[in-house]
Image (cartoon, rainbow, N blue to C red; front, side):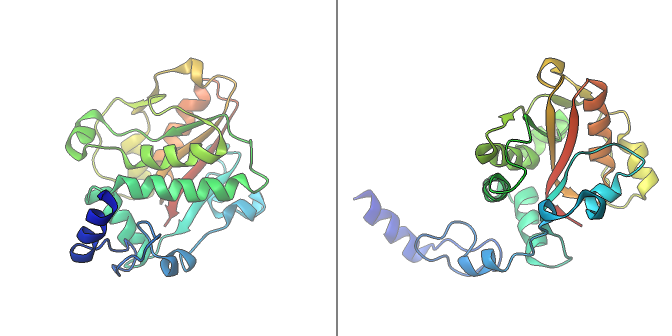
Length: 230
């Protein structure tokens, strides 16, 4: 009876793809098969670290073991639309699903069993209260699933509320976040390989500030991952 009622509701209120807004078919979840097949994957996990664009962002700033991003961000593209829904339209479950997809792919690569702990970039409590969720935490939870890594959403805290990074220069972004992160649970970090996750990598300033805090807490290594790289 429940299945019939669900089918009836879908007839009048069909679920739509977060990528193209088309109606999802039976068995499709959040993103249609066509959109999934045509997403702009980075495949950075298959690239030599010396040639990896994310690793290059951190040269001379912070040592990172692996630089990962699931998708390529293009302005006005499907990835931007999905990120906007995740961040501003209360769709954190999409971030978790993308994390699961990426986790499954990484688990079938040479990066299997390379990460002890997955740590999301935290939001300040005030911003978390307004938004109601941390999109990076949902992505990290999805990533930890197939990687069989320990998920530690409260390892890092943001102790200062900062201004938006959107229109700031590289240096302004770094100044804005350089000392705002603190390791709250050093015992979960010490001598561990950490996978630090965020929603989007632009200049990398936020990840750099978080990564340095983790390394100061004696993390064995820090790798970074994001839903997308701009």
